[in-house]
Structure formats: C-alpha cells, structure tokens
Length: 177
Picture 1: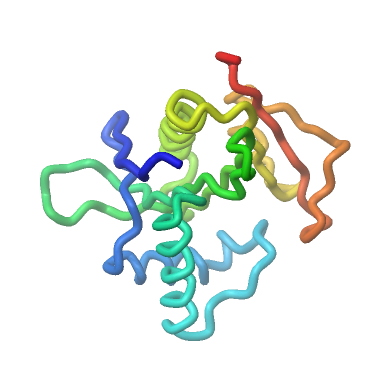
Picture 2 (picture 1 turned 90 degrees about the vertical axis):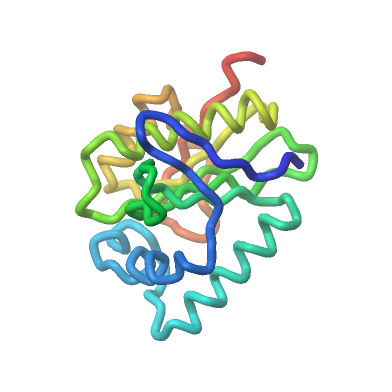
C-alpha cells in the first residue's frame, strides 16, 4: 500500500487525521443531520470518539485505509475543518476499494465534497491503481447520489449492503484500465 499523503485542490486540503481533530469527529459523528442517512449510534462520550480515532490511526498505519480531514487551505496554522473522506475496505488484491464521506451541514451544497471526491478518485485510480471504487449510500440521500452520478458512478442494484438494508451501492471503474 502507498503511504497516505495530503491532497490539495481549489483551496480544499485533504490531510491526515490528527489528535487535534477529535472535536471535529465528535461534531460529525454526533450531528443529527449527518446521522440522518448513516446507520450508527452517536458517541455518548469523548472516549467513544477517541476509540474511533485510534481505530482509524491503526488502519492508516497498516496501510489498509486512507482517511482524510477535509479542510480549507490557508496559510494560517488553524485550517477550518469541514468534514472527512476515506478510502477503505480495499481488497487484499488491491483492485477494489470503498469511498465514504461526511460533511458538516453548514458546508454542504458548496462544491466542497466534489473537490474532495475528485482528489480521492485520482489518488485511488492514478496512485493506487484500483480498478473499481464502490460507494454505499442511503437510498433516500439524494445529494450523495447526485454527487456520485456527477462523477460517473453507476448504481448497481445487484449488490446489497449486508449491514444496512437501506443502502444502495454505486460503482465506478478506473477509466484508465
């Protein structure tokens, strides 16, 4: 696996998760609007978020997942934290991976996730040489479906999410393969 690297485009910086981001993770993982389409319990205490952070850090260190914090790119030491995006569930043969993302509601609808998705797809296909990227999204999450369609993801009704019945699966093949 390739090492995680920072990605930059259109004043959006994707950087690795840091301990200082635990408050952002708390916001994201407990926001009722974000949780509308994600089947998970909100954290009950900060220790829950710290455990999630540790799990992500270990997966990134092992090279089995890539997890970025979506920030505004500025020259100040404190970037504005907007959300997260990840590439995970990469198959052992390195041919397929899954993309996931979440954005604080105040930043939705501004093209931020489009810029982030473009960078991560380029990383997945050009650097990792994945042949296929999948995205699982809730059947009622029209904004996510629209985003995926804009990037030429195709709905594959033959695939079912074994964990979340309400999810549908979109797939995108590497255009260079």
